[in-house]
Length: 144
Image (cartoon, rainbow, N blue to C red):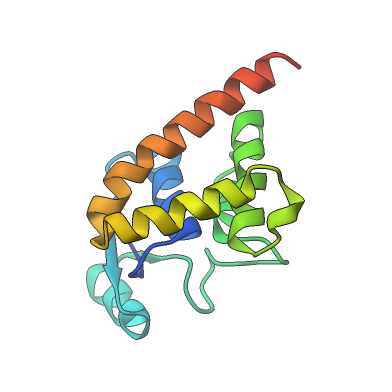
């Protein structure tokens, strides 16, 4: 399936493709375009739009798109994803003090954006960060 969002990735637009490819659609093709082109490309490509404008998979009830996708695809039973979602949500909604890891995730997003301005290359490297964080939270969840 194709998925489309706006270009110039940051926290949520890295976290969501990671979530989609790891838990929702392992063969997903993520397309990045200018914000105003998302509806047109979604229609033309038959792609699912996310994290942009008034779409089903966007920010809802004060939560970021990562949380919306977890809820939409019934992934909330995974305690490690829940912990990661708390970090992503705090970083993406600028409630950085709500989670002890949020400042770090924001710093990582900014730094990777400077190192890798190409969205696809940025995802390639940042997916490793999300894989590592997810595994860390799996370990934390297993201790409870």
